[in-house]
Length: 318
Image (cartoon, rainbow, N blue to C red; front, side, top):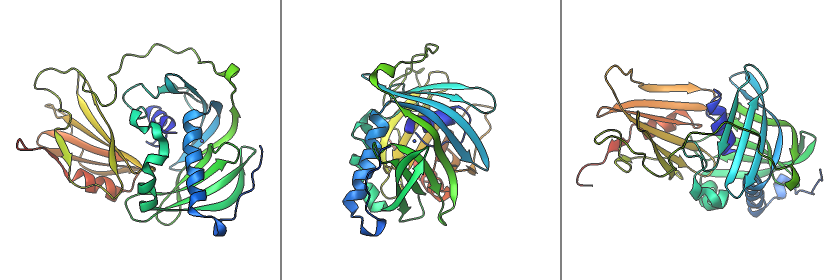
């Protein structure tokens, strides 16, 4: 799903969001915390290990778009091939080792490594059964404990735990953004074939520094974030270049994620300052010592503003 989110952004949709046999599920009132944890673990495993293809719809800002996705896993990692089915036809390919916008390699443990953060910052409960794309699902409600993150309503396929539908919820429970499969097929090994694609340009690996001209760009670890919302931690860094080097730092609490982009301003550049929001995506821009600092993520406006206002270059003494 992280890959799908990155691909939606690439295709021009809001940032967003990387979704048979019935199993008996306990009602929400009788569900123990371990039951919810097991379901979330199954979801994480399914998203990283299953091969599938299907059609999903993405709804945001009262606009809806349909896409075909083919998700494959092999020894190189995860691969997603997406094609728009509405509007202008566009295609995008994402891989777990493709650098900028990819799944952080350190995330191999899945949602388990973030469980303390998730339990500390969200209330989770099972909320009965439903059907999505003709398959029985377990519904999971994820409610934030503070104002710095959104809530979620998740529909997990009962047999596999695969995420078939997700609602991103505001503080009042209203749906900000929705992704839902209308059809999905699990693929066996004989069906795991990669569609032909144009060769991708080489990308520097996540967490490394691309070659840049001396004195240009932003050095990794040269900046510090003074204030983060509870539970958020640094999960990935990346620097793209050499033309216009941009440093990216990605933070996550296990469910929500946001990125900080830092780029040296050039003469004639139009600065982005203040708050902007489109659907689920909030952005905050500020100029710091001649650098454009932008914080973007599927989090409330208050979160990106708090983080953006706390970003400073590290002093020489540090």
